[in-house]
Structure formats: C-alpha cells, structure tokens
Amino acid sequence: MKTINKLQSDVLIIGGGIGGLACAASLKEHNPELDVLVVEKNFAGYSGKANRGGGVLQYFDLNRIDPAEFAVFHANAIGAFLGDQELMMKYVSMNTEMLDKLASWGVNLPKNDDGTYHVMPTGPMTAMICVDLDITLKVRKYAEKLGVRFIDKTALAELYKDGDHISGALVYSILDGELSLINAKRIVLATGSQNYRIGSMWSSGRGDGIAAAYRAGAAMRNAEFGNFAQLAKVKSHNEIVFGENFMYNAKNEFITKNFREFRETDINSNAIREWYTQMTAGNGPIHLDFGPQGGDDGALERLWNRPYGHKFRVLNDESGNAVDTDLEICPMFIGEQSPIMVGHDMQTTIPGLYAVGDCCYSGSGLAGAVPAPPGRNRGSGILNAVFDALVCGEAIGTQKIEASFGAISDAAVEKDVNALFAPLDKADGVSPVKVIEFVQKAMAPVELSVWMHKDRMDKAMGFVNEAKKLVPQMKAKDWHELLNCREAEAMVLSAEMHYKASEMRKESRGWFLREDYPEMDNKNWLKWIIVENKGGDMTLSTMDVPIAGWPAQPQN
Amino acid sequence: MINTKHKIEFDAEKCVGCQQCYKSCFVDVIRWDKEAKKPVFKYVEDCEHCFYCQSVCKKDAIKVVPDYSSEHLMQSFEAYK
Image: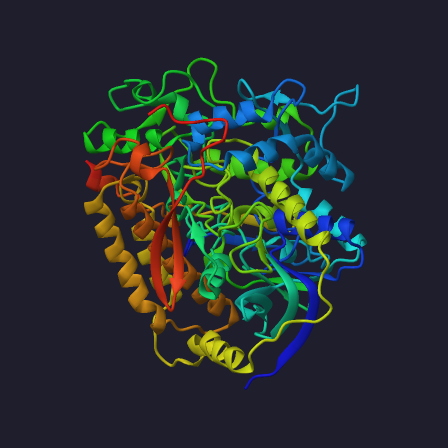
C-alpha cells in the first residue's frame, strides 16, 4: 500500500473559493479554539468563480424591503413556488450583516462620501454593489490571520464515515500524488457547482465534491435545475449579460418580444428556447441590436473603481472584441448544477458533513425552480456563498465539538487508493477527454438540456451511457490527467442525475422547460426530486415542498 | 473547454519568479520550476483563456493568445437549419 500522511483537523473545509474561505473565517470568529484546515485543488484565494465574474453583490434596502415581500416576489417571478421561502427570508434579512462582514474582512466595497454603500438599482426590490475581484484573496488573508491552515494543489478523493457520522477525507496532491488521510470532526464541502468544462470562467466547477458526497451517501435535491445557459458571442464566446433584451433574427424581426414584454436584468430559459425555435425555423442567425445607444459592456467598470479586476476584465473584452466582427449570438450552456441537499444549518443528510456555496445552492432549496446564481437573481452568487458560510460557521462554531475523532476503515481507504490510482497503472485505455466529449454532447446542445423533451432527453442519455461505459477504461499519464479522470467521472454522474431527474419531473416550472409537458403542475409537482446512491444504484424519490404557512402560495 | 489551442507567450527575461501566474491558474495549466524559479506552461491544452495569469503579472512577461476557433460550445448550428 502507498504511503499515506495522517492528518487531523477539528473542521476540514474542502474548497478555497469564497464559500470555503468565508466559512473558515466565520468559524474562527465564533470559536478561535477550533482547528480549521482548508484543502484546495488549486490555490485558495485564486480559485472558484467569485474572482472571475461580474463581481456584484445583491443589495436589499432593509428599511424599504420586507424579507417576506421579496420571498413572495421571488416565489412568483423566479423560484416558481419550489423555493424554501423561510430560507429566502433569512437570506434577505442577513443582507446588511453579510456586506458589513465582508467589509470587516478587508474586502473593498465602494462607498459614497457619506459612508453608505455605493448602490445601483436592478429592479423594484433589488439593487447591487460592485466588489473588486481580489475579494477571495482578501478573505484568505483574513482567515490566515485568524490561524486557519491551508493545503493547496490538493484534491478530494473520497469521504469517510464512522457509522453514520462523517469522520474524514482522503485527498491527494495533483502535483505528485502525495496522499493524505485527514481525520476530521466536521467537514464542509465548498467545492462549487458542476459546469462540465464548457463556459470559460465557469470551468472551475467540475462537480468532484458533489460526486464524493453522492458516493458517501448524501442525498441530492433539485439536480434537474443544473442547466443554466447564457447568451454568448458566436466567435469569442464572451457572454453578453442583458443581451436577451435585444435579440433579432435574420429577417431583422425583434424576437425578444416573443418571450418578454419588458426588459429584465436576468436571462430566462425562454430566451434560449426562442433562439432554438428561430434557428430551426430557418430564421437564423440570431444577432443583437442595441439600437442607437449601443451596448454597454464597460458599464460596471465606469461605475466602480476596481483596480484589481480592471486589467483582467479589459484583457478579456479587448481580446474578444478583436474577433467579434458582428453581434451574432448563441447560447452557451453553463450548467451550475448544485444539488447537495442541506438543511437550514447547511448540514447534509450525513451528520457532521456540511456544504456551502455553489455545490449546494439548489440542494439548499433556497431559490426553487432555477439554477445556481446568477439564476435570474443577479448578485446572489457571491452573497449566497457568504450566507451559507455564515450560517454554517455559526452552526458549527457554536456547537460543543466532541473531543475524539471518528474512525476510518483501513480496508476502505486501501480500496479507494487502488481505485483512485487505477488509471495511472493502465498500459492502454481512453483519454478522459473522450469521456468529457460524450458528456458535453449530452449537456451542451440546448434542445437536449434546456428546452427538453423526452425523445431528446433519451438521445442525451445515450451519450451519457456511452461516457459511463468508458469511465472504467480511462487512462492517465500523470497526476494532472488523473485529476481530469476524476473530474470526468463526476461529470458523468452529474449528467446522469440531470437527465433522470428531468425525465421524472413531468411539467414545466420556472427555468425548467419541457416541450412535452409545457404547463406548471401544482397539483402533482409541488415536490422536490431527491436523488440518492443506494448500494451503487441511483434512486429517485420525491419530497413535498412544505409550502403551507409560507408567505407565497400558488393560485392554482 | 477541452483540447484548446490557445497559446501563452512567455518572456523569461522579464520574469522575476513571483509565482503569481502559477497561483492564479485555476485549471492547473501552469506548474512551477523550483530550480529555475520560473513558470512552466505545461498543460496549455486545458487553458480557458481567462487572462488571469497575464493580468497578475506585474512585469508583463505573459501574453495569452486565444484561438477561439478551438473552443466548442457544441451548439449544432447546421442541424438547426
């Protein structure tokens, strides 16, 4: 058996993006005595998505907006009554606390001369604040100051339980394969969503934490809402946020009017369906026309001074603009599957195992029938992770933690190590890229994954099954490629969950669109679909949404 | 993205070995040569053209040159017509 380092930590956090880092900081603030270790696949503070996106934080004026009011608006306009309204009210009510907490951790939140936050309205109830893209570096620095330990360039392989309770994790260096078995009293997954390596900035989300939780027996919820897509320029693939408000077909007909009456801040899946409908009717290509005022890609950069993020954004825009000779657009499938099921304390269905951020956004039930942020709720991505982190930090940080560590079975570890390294030992086999190609064929075409129909989903499942067959044959020439193998396997699992849950949900709701079941069915489908691993078999069941007593109720 | 053909141009003369590019790569394209104290652009086929390494380099030693045609969004345009 290979040499394995034995490590211990009261709390092990896996993932060093904004969710994991904020959780680490919050834990130490609640209980400075806790030994907190963050393990990150690349470099904590540089990883994740918070430092690569628009850098916006949702803002609620709590002097004006009642959390219940927003929960009702959200249930009607976005979450389609599938969201946990109690959790949504808590999220809204903690808005000021979250912003102040980030500022106290050293994050640069622009302020007006009078000391109030510099806010831009985005809707009748919402607004946003820009944040510089060194946000995660600032929080890492603060967490380090509090004594949080870090291990970088190290990936999660498997999770272990002692009886029902979480007891540890097997991790490996992606540089040299060095193995570590970490005994931990609590584990927090902050490993991000599943994005199948399609969209550029979204590519850190590869679902390895979701897969490890699933294998360990944690339940998944809302796996079918992992089909986010955005409009992108056809040549550069740069996304055009807000572009769905300006769509025209080849006959120069304004096609946005076919799916929305007024401009909205966020894309919805009807825009994706419209693109597909126009293309198949021979009305393509589809382009944007912003009218005399033109597009406004640089609006955020002019409104806020963000020295760290500025160069990064400008390089991206300039490079893209050099090849974008027109404004032809197409959908870019992103995914954002985030199904790890957690309760109101961010604990999964495995006692002692918690999750925060984009690995459990849908799984928390917070937003209902919509994929992870932006998920038609702009600015909620970073703040959702911070929300989860503060809730989780308080839940664990105020617990009386037992003195002893749980056991980890040597036999289980040996079996997992052999399975982990198996692709390295193969003389012949297939590249993980081959497996990922099949998964991308299943997920990326929007008529399969976004504008769904049973016949098309069956076709997609055919690709998933092709990928699944190749998984045991994957071969890796080095540690980097071994990581690709593990991620490919996680992608196959996510795609399978997506299509099995999507076929089960026989209705359309919120972002979720089925051509063969176009109506929302509150009689039969005010339910969450739960996916679980039972003895190696993927099982699906439903759970009623406990909507009685919540502020918003469907009318029919 | 998989199997991209983006290029990363690197000027070793300008590099001062600060490791910022190595740390900034969120997809493990860049490795670190401890002896030479320079980055190694080892897995360029996995580059996502995010420009983070270029933007954090204070010495302008890195230039990412995207080949956008090597990225595939997998929307089958021809099949729709």
